[in-house]
Amino acid sequence: MLKSRWTSLIATTALVLSTTLAQAQSAAAPAASAAPDVWIKQISGEVIDAVKSDKAIQAGDTKRILALVDAKILPGVDFQRMTAASVGRYWRQATPDQQKRLQDEFKTLLVRTYAGALTQVKDQTVELKPLRSKPEDTEVLVRSEIKGKGEPIQLDYRVEKSGDGWKIYDVNVLGVWLVESYRASFAQEIAASGIDGLITRLAEKNKAAAAKG
Image (cartoon, rainbow, N blue to C red; front, side, top):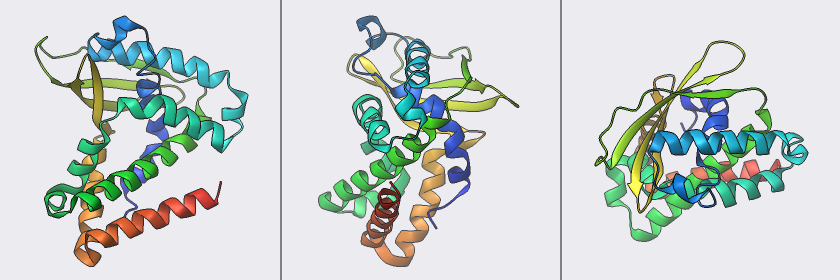
């Protein structure tokens, strides 16, 4: 089944993941070459303010939200690596066409999930933990907490150096890594109906979500 514990957590994590990734291409020049935790902190503050001031997003305007996600969030994610890791060993068995279709459908699934959660941005703040890395590292773990009402929520990122900037390829919420969570459900679907079966299942979920607006 594609539904997992990750699904129940994803709405909570969407705020910070979205604000982390948003404006990755349009941020000021220093952010592009900054340390990954600095990149996350700078961008998140800017986008939280932008979302709070956008009444259309707060009202759930799907087209407005998807446009924001498509323009501002997607450039900050390595979806190919994220999809390949989520599909696991089956990725190497997939044809180039199947790989492309898997990536497209998985991207759509995540985009719609995060887009829906953007309307929940209220008074949350982000606190970054000390970064444990060396200047020459090309893959880094960035740890943070979401603070608002209730207990703080653990949110960690696996990021990779990409050109002059950074891209996220996995996210950990309360001890649950996105890639690991989807890998288990994807493996079950592939075992039952093959790679094409997984693609069909993802497409069905995306079609149903689009029909709801």
